[in-house]
Structure formats: structure tokens, C-alpha cells
Length: 97
Image 1: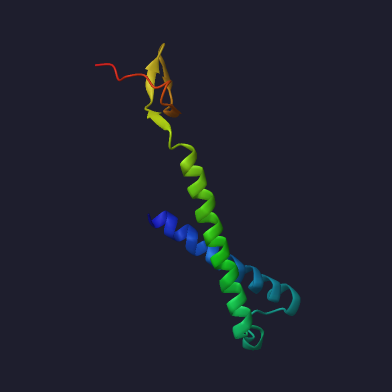
Image 2: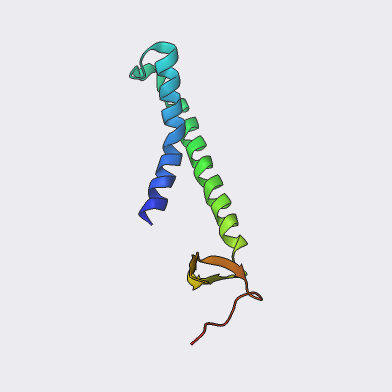
């Protein structure tokens, strides 16, 4: 959960970091308060929020792709380890006992 929270915070801060880099390259410093007007900060916050929402929708869509699949754990076959995978429900084997 902390990883997801940190990733979303990073996505929110990306526009601010990009704008600071732009100011640093074009004006030599990003610490001039006059460059950080309230309108600019609002646009950057909206851009960061849009990135966060887009990532949530994207990763939510990816998670739904495996909704009709079953996880088959790692196993030994012919002396080799076969990694775990998601397979369609029809292909999933019943666990051997």
C-alpha cells in the first residue's frame, strides 16, 4: 500500500519537478517566488491530479484483465521449476493431494 501511495505522490509531483527544471534551465534558478504564481501552481496541481487519475484508471484496467483467470503457483515439472502464472479457469488444474 505504501508503494502505491508513494507512486501516486510521485506522479502528482512530476509537473512541479518539470516546471522547476524548466525554470532552472531557462532562468538559472527556480527559487524566484514571482515565477511560482498561484495560477501556475493551480495548473501544475491539476496536471498532477490528472496524472494520478490516469494511472489509477490504467492500472485498474490492467488488474481487470486477470479477473477471469486463476493463479497457478510455481511447481516442479521434469526436474525444473515452472514459475507461477495466471491461466484461464478452464486450463487450471485441480490441486493434487
